[in-house]
Image 1 (cartoon, rainbow, N blue to C red):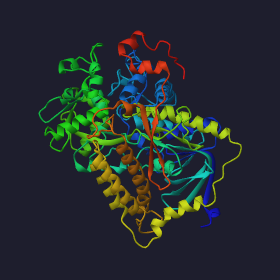
Image 2 (cartoon, rainbow, N blue to C red):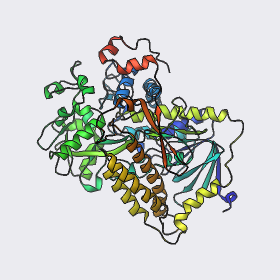
Image 3 (cartoon, helix red, strand yellow):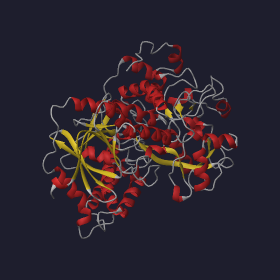
Image 4 (cartoon, one colour):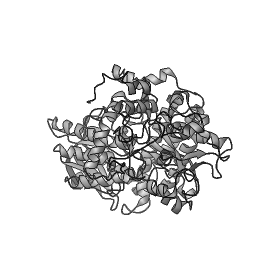
Length: 616
């Protein structure tokens, strides 16, 4: 293979992924004078961010003036079961309002309050109405705004291009290899810094809200390049995905339905969530229907249990179904029809109205929806520095769902979209600062490019091999049954053993046909990242011997104090297997620790956190 003849581009900063995090990172890097390019697997505007519906969390205080960054920070830490990186949660809570207002300045059209301010709605785990929204199409509006702004900044976009691997000069990043999905032509990107914004790996599970792009490419590339991954055992199952018909099972049903007043019912018509209120949230959660009905009109009312954190609601739904109180198709009912007028539902939840009308022949203004848990989000990802978003590999940055730290053991709804804005911007500025500090341009070590391309094309060149589609189905069934919403050590050990076998078989898949217009080849390549990501998740889940947030072990019930003091960090071992280390969490500044553990009453009264700096 003559590497000199392969199509080559040179940039200062290369962003892999064109969702909210990738676009915001590219905008920031370009604003700081960097020659910036974005590589995306699909067409611009088709990123998975468009699937985020409910809103972006930021303590603007428009709906309730009592809201501020301290209460948002406290909610995030409590939702993440105090496993969040303290500094990341602080940065997010402080910077989110400015990033949302910035998006508005760039043209985002938000819903409005009667006073003309950005409207905010209630969401699970948030004390006050905090989610700035555009109906139930907030992610779509974010992408529309960011891509329009980015295009006009002169950023280069390489669309329908899949990244295959990272290039290094010694320990430093020196670029990436990829291929054009349409033609199969190979391409090299020589660059001084790479920002991974590739999202998660939800397509490793059978029932998932994730789109086809979510195959763990960023996790796998970072892992192979020597980067550390963290918190990979925490995979969030969103409580409400569609369960019927089978063709749309797992499709997201926004938490905004519950934020607008929808309630969860079992087959007996009971609002069952009152039976599943954890002790930690009891003081802030309504214990009776009568009390729940007063919220949010009564300032003293506690929020209804349908708006508990996602891990709690997802496990409650699973318990109801398991005990025989589920809906006809294995879920529960989500009812907003009896709670809000039809015109209100169509105005506030237009996507949900059309989604159920067209896909399930259900009119949500007249009938309840059938919903159940669906694999939705990775709390874990590349371990990064909170302020710069750089990994332990010099020149390699990560942001958004691809990075770990902000969400701890469980993400609050709405924190993901503001996460993309806040840490996308920090990644862009971090990469720009890194590039400015380089004394010389990194150059890839000889043989790297050839090795990456030979591996990718081997699936086309061999005479025979297994079907990548069938192996993907095996992987999804394995993860769904053995690494699901609840786990046991025995099942996780079994999953790891089977994943070892699957990993060997995945290396020998065969993609028939040429490299042009070949979806089988795309599947063969994606399968490698999916299997790698799945193995890391299973190994981390086996190592964490407790139940915390989105990670539930039936053989280790409840949170354990010693495990609350450590994060699990994963690196690739010399044998290619995940090597897991328990890394002790540093103590936070005193003011953050006090705020995180304070009562709402003390925070509102200024008895706690009064000396906390508002600047970052």
